[in-house]
Length: 162
Ligand code: GDP
Ligand code: MG
Image (tube, rainbow, N blue to C red):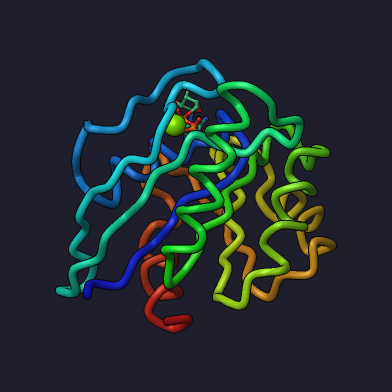
């Protein structure tokens, strides 16, 4: 079985952008529309010569009902399947109630979690990161998935945490 990396976080934080970068595909839909990925999406990534399954999710909004509730269910299933969870947040909006909702779900999981503070391009990364240390996770990394910044460090960290 290949190790499984799940991408979770509220809609529009950049999960599908990172999925495409890791899998070198355009399979995941990326758009400036919260909640576009309705379902889980699986891809394969080769990182430092090791193959991984990468799972993109629709996002957890924290106020789930209807289709959003279904999306949240998919996210929770992706977390269950994962060997490591990448929890994406948006450096530009700062922490939201939905981020805290996702964090509270993840805290109950006994698996490695990497917090990725995405969209740090053009902003002060350290200031953006400091907010998220309060979530209580050891590993908080800056990322600009759309530009590839932070991806090498992320890959190294994935190997450290597996
Ligand atoms: P998802 O809903 O979490 O899958 O988010 P998407 O990957 O669809 O991205 C949502 C929006 O954020 C899109 O407009 C992306 O182009 C944008 N985005 C993603 N990564 C970055 C980034 O590193 N920097 C900036 N500035 N925008 C980004
Ligand atoms: Mg998406």
